[in-house]
Length: 326
Image 1 (spheres, helix red, strand yellow):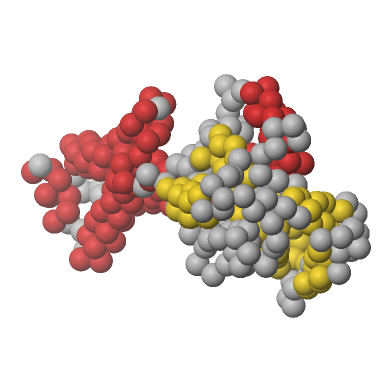
Image 2: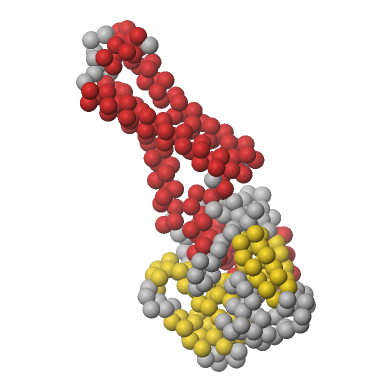
């Protein structure tokens, strides 16, 4: 400690403030990663349950502690070898280098929402509530890599007839299909080109509602069971089963910060969920490192103001469905 005190005594006030500030900031930023890992809903479960995630966080935090220790060792060695020579430049390089890990980590996190992997096909999303005629309103959601002005044509006959068009260019496209009637097949087409989709609303039978639930497909995980996911979607699509809607209870993807996994999920689900009303709830894997931006763009009915991502309520024929993120 004496050597370190002698070293700092020989520095100018400006040098002391500069060096100490850099070391303290680097330490606090690095250790804040541990705080984030144990408090963030997306990371807390992974930190507690997944060994390699916990080890990685501990290593990063250890690096934050080691840098000041290395700085102390450099000072002691330099004072022993040549007390008149101050290794200030070496310590500054060390201090700046110690900032690279936390700044790089947080910088990457901030940039994640901009890292997209292509267009996302349409999903029919159930909107909270019961709708005007006892049939919940439905939103048609899709996302385009380029900002575009899109429109939708929809109605209860193949000729459709009700048109809605956006006013400005956007990536997120969400159209509300409202005032739906029970037990009616509706048709819709995007931008008056390509596939004409259809879906059938729930029949008006009191206390009757047939729906499917599933969870945790974890698209992108090495151990994800794609065969099981495809069988579930086949059951959903089979008209013999007569499912009227589908609820997906979290962890759509393995790593929420990887949009390529959301792309795979959207492409896999859309052939069924563009015809059968669908509503997922977000999971801790889905929101990891900014993944909530992807999830909200693809699976939140944006046409509804303040549409919640963590909970919602749907009423069909007197039956109340509450979906909660616990």
